[in-house]
Length: 266
Image 1 (cartoon, rainbow, N blue to C red):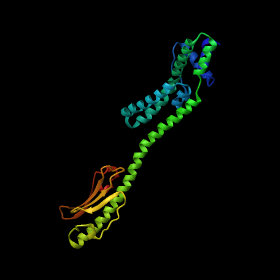
Image 2: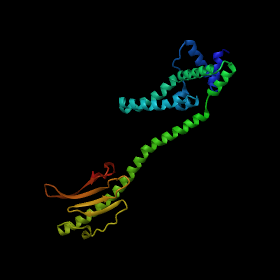
Image 3: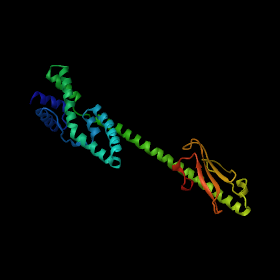
Image 4: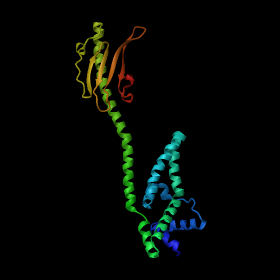
């Protein structure tokens, strides 16, 4: 066994040692490292980097992969995610061995600079090289937190929109019942009531509804401020008349997010 081979074995560690050693020696014989396929690096890229103690490269990969996905998405549109996924698998698969070869050579140079005793040099390499199962577990946990954070960033606003939409729908149902009572009063008396109570409508608003009242020829439901309505908001039904003399109540909204509105109030 040559001295270089012994150094490589110490830097690689016992896990898949023959696989990496054969490629490292082939790189050295060719005078340069070249592409060669690595399935674990292709499919489990971040964890593979951490497992092989390439901490900086692993976290740099996370940043680069997301940046690459964003750039490809901007260029290719709808098919961008598929192209980005292929690139995120293919590039590490082809070039991970090159990066690992450079990493091990760097560790070897550091060990050679640390002392002249071959046994000491091998000991340094065995301590700094090899694999790190605990590191891969830590990396998995960290990545899990990142994924959970990303999911929460998407899910929480969607859930809040769903909740607010339900609140506005309940407020709208209250407004429609009031309109029915007012319209019945108008047809009977040929005029609008001054107050809802005159139309026989005595509401019991839910907690998220501040109040409902007549405002001239309009019915106003006010949403209580808070939650997804920082400035409050209102649903307003107005009595309108078309050119042919037909009347109808039209709903519109003030200071309410459009995604939360019923179709007839948009």
